Image 1 (cartoon, one colour):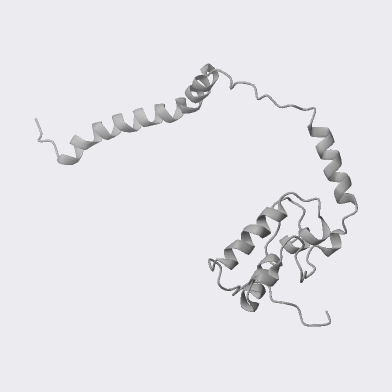
Image 2: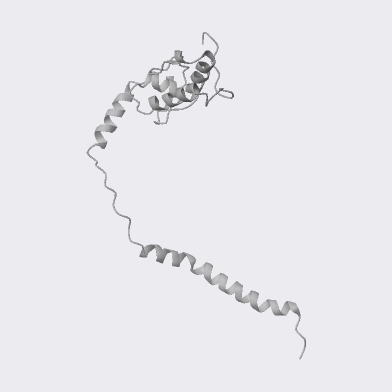
Length: 154
């Protein structure tokens, strides 16, 4: 009998491993589908649809009169916020942030433009109020890298 080399001792375990791995890969998707099909369906979500159409219609009608071409217009005074309570530097930071950040309601306006041109928006006032508070408390100290004030007369 010939002596076995160390390499020949590894071939059999590697072949068994490759076979087991290949079988696992082959049956992975059918087993996953089987397991998922055995799971109970998620409970139904209860939504009061009676309020959806009116809200959607009211929101659409409110935005119908909004001039969407003004989405990026620079707004100097943000309605609902008394920026005179801030120092000149803080006021500049606040105005630049309000004219650079977008409203979260999906209108596409900056925060300042949304407050000025879409007063029915429920999202912009809390956002500009939080921005005002952050600037007033010094948590936002500068507007470096944000949209700059356009030149006068523009």
